[in-house]
Image 1 (cartoon, rainbow, N blue to C red):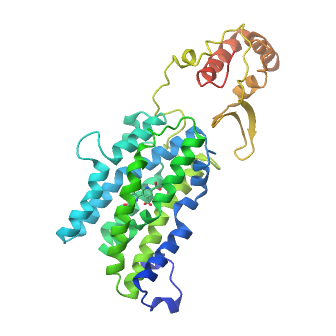
Image 2: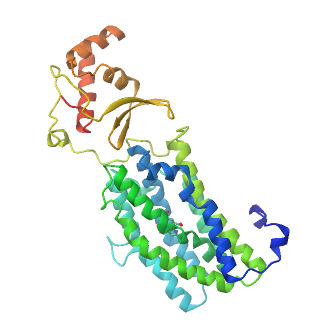
Image 3: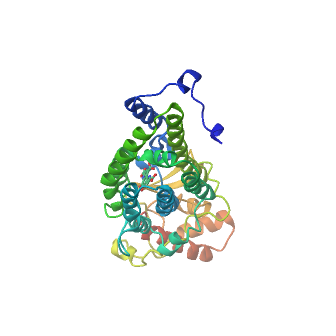
Length: 361
Ligand SMILES: O=C(O)c1cc(C(=O)O)c2c(n1)C(=O)C(=O)c1cc(C(=O)O)[nH]c1-2
């Protein structure tokens, strides 16, 4: 099965690397293949995703988080040395916690809830992409079937995670107004857990990869794991960014969420929009055509809302001059429809936008 992995050049295959050179070779794999380089992460960290795309990331990544302790239990089951198990079992405790309400998985659920998901929907894993499931499950199978050295080496992506985590937390806090420090609390603990885990795993690999063949296996295991992470982002990009082809049964925007509180419009001071009001876009909110995704969006500071054709037709007439009733008459003429019926529909739509604070009267 190792044929599936890239074969090193012939003169490299027989050479035993010093532990330092082995570490350098492993770091080089990360420098070229770690998921910080993936375009989806670049968009995520730079604030270029809309809220639904961030939601898709949080939802799918939940499956990775939930399966990490399953993976680590499989690694633990390969260990015949009690001292080794004592160290490794901490990883399971970190994710599961010591009691209900504690641990990394719980903190990831908070992150998913923080971006709007209903907890039960996330827990059900119903909406995750099949490709996410395939990649994560492949990781669990890998550590169950390969040698202990390969299982441990495959966790070495964590050598590179502190950098990406710092970049992600800073970028998301700066670029998305729906993300708070509380929502991202998951990552606080990882900043100390990941280096501790990675140092241990790296020492183990440097000590136990004592032949050229074993060193190649360790490198291939890390390459495989980089691919586990990379393919998850490929799948997210394909489904939710471009071409935006969401597979059957995967999460679609608008589902699995906790309904937004109806009082938000009032709290935001916008008030309900009625037929006689003249709606307008608040300062900083613009109607724009997104060339990449070939659709109209409403661009608000640090947020983007996808618009359907009806919303675009209405918002093209929202100019701070026309009343809702006048907009309904204009659209009634364009579409040869009863303005009163249109007015009712427009009011629902406009008030929904007002609730999201991208429209005011
Ligand atoms: O946020 C990230 O980019 C990131 C990356 C990785 C990784 O490199 O595998 C892990 C995590 N986070 C993480 O939170 C985590 O618990 C984790 C466990 C493992 C592992 O292979 O055992 N990797 C990672």
